[in-house]
Length: 354
Image (cartoon, rainbow, N blue to C red; front, top):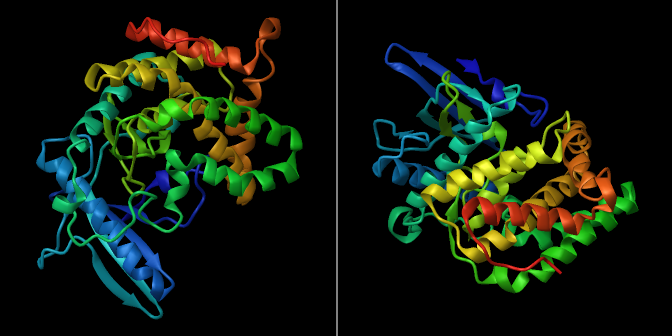
């Protein structure tokens, strides 16, 4: 078995490898392992994994080739428990997606981001019909807030709850950064009524460059890691995916970052059309996603998280408020992106955010 580099890639996630590639005469597979240290966590972990498997099976049964497939053992179990001393190991076998992860590509072409939008939109279109009462019977995970342990943190519907916990730690590092996030929360609050009325469904919710596989022909081979599936606003999926596309350690220009995000949105829209209200709030949701991730790194300041926040998250957020020409304000950046988005998608409506 070969440990997957994606699990060890130090720019995003430094941790003990829990996923291996298994090569057999019949092909390659993913061997996934979850270690449960505390007995009281076992039921929650099992429920979350069974829920994830149910979602993957649902996608596969509807012809989706962009998500991993789940395999069962001879007793038809898709999660196998193995006792190891005081620990319980939860073992699964999934299909292997050939390709390399998006984050490892240097200067990916703009067309690739359009293809990513199409892929994410395709998955969301299928997931729209997922009903856990029918397809995930027996799963007790609270998928409204995230299936496993602190998974609610990544539910963008709960961004303000997360920031209320994380921001005090950010203030200890820099009160300027806290004030910056507060200004973005203010913009988000001004859109709260619009956001509350948006459509909802189950989404992947973690479409960052570590979870996107690229084929040798520079197309989207698949989306992996469905462990954070959550029911929330549908547009949160797009906000997460587009926000991460704007991040780069070399700090690309605003125009290039904007074009990447717009390409993703246009691709998504071609499969699962956005509503006018979703267009109006999208960039605010994107910024809130980065705020949550940045402040979470302050709250959990392990070495890898310090690296990520200083190289990706905070530079992006800071540049929304500085390093911009002619006295442009963060609010103007919001209006600029939304206006460009309306034009790209042919929405000729909406007023500047105020």
